Image (tube, rainbow, N blue to C red):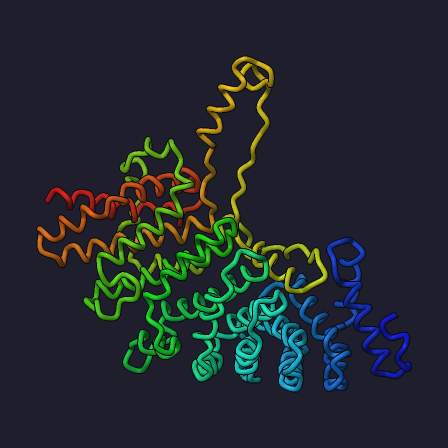
Length: 499
């Protein structure tokens, strides 16, 4: 019906065909799955590359072609790390088409989604996208389209995801620095702060950019010739002070309290920054510290961790003695660098090395599917609730029912912290305790006693970490080791108050 009034030409026929294939591939029913697998077996990537190359100036043809390419690339069953020749060709064509149609916001969003889906598949594709100039093109699209509409928020989320996928390349980081792209991503994080699906996706993908660069800095990949990685990262930030990020992270954690993937990424950023600060403190480089340069800033981070973990603190955690949780582990001898590197690998040891593909999209947009894919990658722990048999206290109409029901409302059953949040929170607590101890040892005795007395929430953090051990320590060795190291450091801090 859309193309009935237009004359039947090769362009209109191609646009109708690609639009039909796109609609056949959307959804999560068996017919959509069959259509998607058939298209991949028929070499649809090669066909779409040819159509984009031949009809690159026809927006009606290449817009559904790029959208279909993004959908099929994100949902295919080929494991990450593997890529084909036509995926490299597609990156060049999509980047070129994005430059030719800069005024179409919807098409720019589809192109950002396609670059995101392709570049994240392997480091070679990410490097190819950066070599084709995709970083500069995407950052300029992010700067050109700003607003409060849902479509613009989706474009910002797709663009930030594409930048996060390409920043692993040295060429991509150089282009990001030249365009001041990291400052633009951080401004998008501050602008789109609501808990809607589109704006929470901006937060998720935007913080992923910061996290990827932090992982590179932790690994030493950003080191300058004189070995100073902070100088290189300061140029990427274009003058932004690290301590300004802490209130933004706190607002993200508070606003999106029910979005576990976003909580996990924000905590990973906090843990990475704390580990870097702890290493700088051990090298007596207090001037280059990022978020805990003083005991007052450490108190703010402590309050943030306690506010995040306190709702999940179990009542039975107080019965866990320090010796029973840490006597059989030698985790306190591990360096902080091991804690920082463990954040990068958040998958459980019992999981297979090649996870199965996530479920296909359930709506008609690639954007909603990709945000659900990001959520599916997190290891969310769900607690099953079994129905108890009816008794005199739980049966409506019984004289004890109202009293029992009122008592249950006063003491709700608390759920354990999700696993994807537990590991970065434990690593952050470990690094924070190390930084606090180093600050206190550098102070005079009287001043350190006063500062330690102001850290009254260390007791809450101690109970929260014991709850994490009770919830995940039996199955997750990394979580148990990080919590044990943090508990030992907190115990040392508590003993320091009586010195």
